[in-house]
Image (tube, rainbow, N blue to C red; front, top):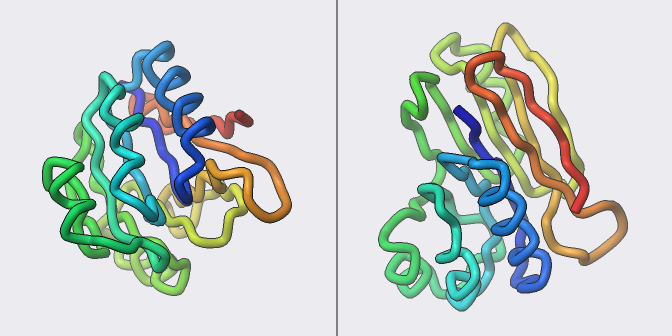
Length: 159
């Protein structure tokens, strides 16, 4: 199964549209969003995903009530802890708790965002993924990650 991992979309509707097209074309079944949607109108585009979206609030998310409503309650306060495709997942926005979640031995995958820098590594036997940022703000590339849950291989893809 393929999981799409994104973060820091920051209302960049054009880039969000590219993500939806990419994930739909790859047959992604689940999408994890590590926060900073920013505005509820991003769901005008995100609703085009053929995959289930689950996400958390980031530090820049504004109208949380309307974000929850527009997302069909698929956005929650961090951390988001779940089992996705048989793997135990923790999703946070800021990186401060990544090491603690990884060291706990309870998770196969820890996802975070906030830094706008892609990061894929193994930490204490846990796959840690920061997909970077979707939005074209600040410096750096716009990136996402596609994770194959069978092989636990994560691919960073530039938009």
